[in-house]
Image 1 (cartoon, protein in one colour):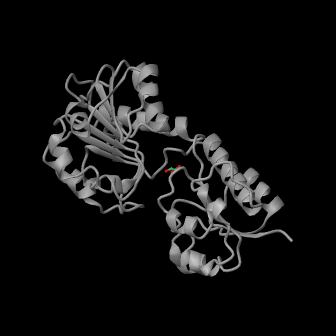
Image 2 (cartoon, protein in one colour; image 1 turned 30 degrees about the vertical axis):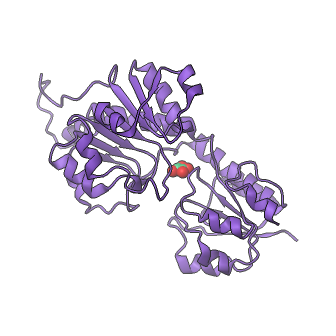
Image 3 (tube, rainbow, N blue to C red; image 1 turned 30 degrees about the horizontal axis):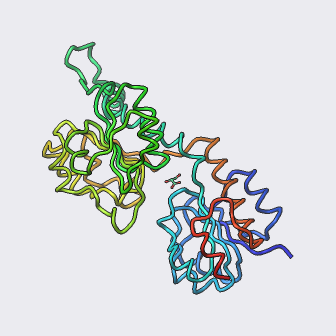
Length: 326
Ligand code: DGY
């Protein structure tokens, strides 16, 4: 008998084939996440759950899923999963680090470029028939090359963004809870305190995890410390930035521009005040969205799921200590 699993969205076919070959899988095929009641109904008999970052895996769900052995989250971030609760119950949780690093860093850099050089505004001008001539003062932006890049969170993705910044001759500052001397030996980067990074950077790019400590890490007080010309880019998790404080900072000229791949809430409603502003770019959480990377993420999630079902350590466990409990 194959173990029962629930998969909360259709993934690339190679990954679905791998899952079906080992599991008795029920798959939610909707484009939107399964509604909460549907998710809860479907977990009572399962041993494995393959989720996306849109699915909340909390104590309520785990109470329903008494046979659950493994949660495989098809994302590197896992703030949608109550990992502490899973660990207490001996449920192993997997994620998909590494394979999306360069793709996400490329995208963060593309937002830096697009915001600095007003690419999206330029496109809107042309489409609206407002392109009258070449003009010496039209859509002037900021240079990226040789500017100062401030990286909040020097994990894999932050480091990959630093490498891109190096190619553009940028001065690179970073801040993190731990200093990474090895990276400092490899790259021309400088470790600074949070406030100094805010004050000195032309571009501030966020790459930290969402935790209780980083919720609204960037709010009114932080915008006040930034340069008036600063550009903020967020490709990590929406709630790290206080959106209403950001709206105020952009309206009042405390900072110049923002480019967000992630928002609070997601999806951001089209009526959100930020979307009335020209100096903000918002895209729908697509930093890892290349064909190759999404396929690798799905395969990695399938492998984590299958290993967990076999009682083995998944290739990418978030809470390896969960398995020792059993
Ligand atoms: C993740 O993996 O956490 C990203 O936000 C989506 O790829």
